[in-house]
Length: 174
Image (cartoon, rainbow, N blue to C red; front, top):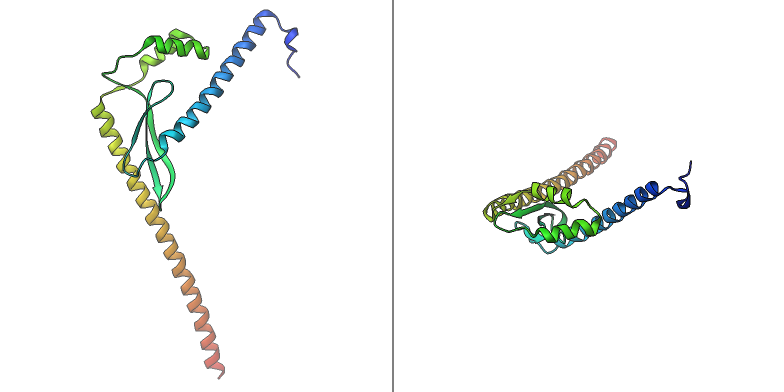
């Protein structure tokens, strides 16, 4: 089955299709922005610290890196909140809702449900996550080193066993 051609659609169907395409375009655009913002948010953040960033949608995000053996493997992200003391620019968010084709009242209602944190709370939470990421990084690297040492030990035992067999065979046959 194929969907009807655009010219075969009635006005309501055409309006629904246009709305769906608009929403898909907005979601695709938002996904692209999110990906680039996540990359920006996670760059050049030293292990044990965090970066605070206001995203393009005017919400706050934070990141702390996960580094194993000197390699940046990932991040812990926390975000989409406001600071308690900052006033909200409702007109800016109404404009965003219109720009992306979202229902303004539903968009503002969702905005009101976002957490509002004090700067002290943000600092305490991200200090915890930074230390947690640092601890995870250290434990992962220690486990990698241990696995390598154990693999080397197993190889050495195998070589020793083969060498012992050769010498035993040599002396028994001598």
